[in-house]
Length: 168
Image (tube, helix red, strand yellow):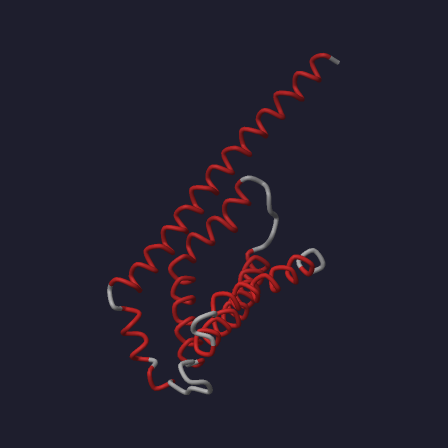
């Protein structure tokens, strides 16, 4: 019985070591992903790429409200997000599919994983577009207090999502 207890402790230590290793690897991959995002934002802001993209999208300058260009915002967001997804796809594949399989944390097939990725991307795009359009709309109609209205909207959205997330 004493030998069995010792083996159990060793097994747990081995599992804990693997868990630490997995967490460390995930943290590093998360930092690389963050770095990709930072480089992308810097490219947009400091190279003139954002202005160039805005100018390309200028023909879509329909304004239902003065100062708000919903089609430009929509397509700018879609282009930037899809470019980010393409650049970070190898990292997403490794961290979301390869790594969990390597550590025995997933038995999901590549087809199921891809379906989940595309569903997540669809939700991210829809929610991101809605949020960004609300922010730009508020910037146009409430230029002095837009930040307050955005904070209220985000608070409302957070409360709703906190209640829906466990159910969904």
